[in-house]
Length: 209
Image (cartoon, rainbow, N blue to C red; front, side, top):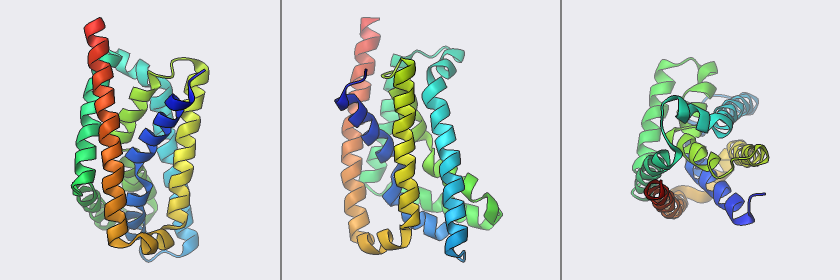
């Protein structure tokens, strides 16, 4: 049975890499011109697709790595470095700029009904950081019960993301530019610390092997 600390760390890691507050203004931009009903349809579809992708990597992450001959400690180091880079982008607000470029591309090139799949579900919800974090965490939840608990954690994070989309206009208005900036930097610092821990654990496992 995974400890409370492990469950809480997994929850924080997945939630921070998805970054619902940072997605709220992008969701509003992508769904500009839609009524509330249409926005909720996009939010639900994007959430379901994002959950399916992350759940797949939570359950089969180790098997996917095995196909490519990659050990979990090696992926833990690589994934930790990637998460640290994402944390760096969050702290210095480079990640938001990249996400906004993705959103702008989708508005001009994709039909409105596909926005939920791209770029909202992939790569904004289930992006490289969230996928890497999920695969890394799957190694800490090796049992069937552990996998189910990790999928449950992902479901909770996706539900929070959907609620953020549902309240996107209010959340964006409440936080404002300053609030979003402070929150993003704070989450970035937390993610950086978690990323360092992933790298340290990976190096320790590699040396032990």
